[in-house]
Image 1 (tube, rainbow, N blue to C red):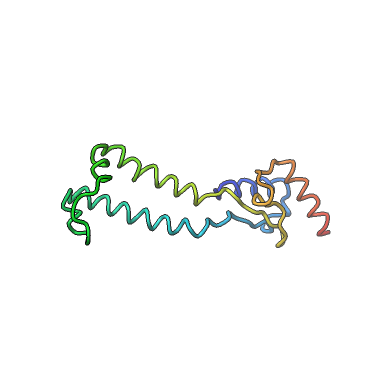
Image 2: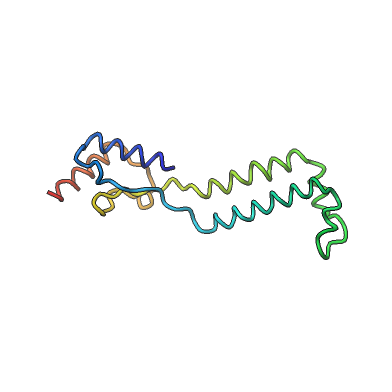
Length: 139
């Protein structure tokens, strides 16, 4: 949610033109497990497409599997729901884990606002007060 940070930065720079170029910040990076989930999801997509195109023969290519599993037969009974789950719902769950919406705002290297610490989105008056205090300390 880079947009949240950019909106706050724009608001502060409009209120305090002298801050232009001195406000930095950004979104908090996603947890490491999200990258692994994306890779697993990609493999799942490829395997799903292979199973669709190869049909029941797909299982003959997998070592130690002699017949089609029961759960695969259930997926075949509900093809549309299975595809929606695998190609729409699962990716949206993974992408929601990647975007926390958390951000921090710094002024001259000092943290002015941290959504991680407060757990809330700042309103305009809060930010103005925080920057008034920060500007007073720098003068």
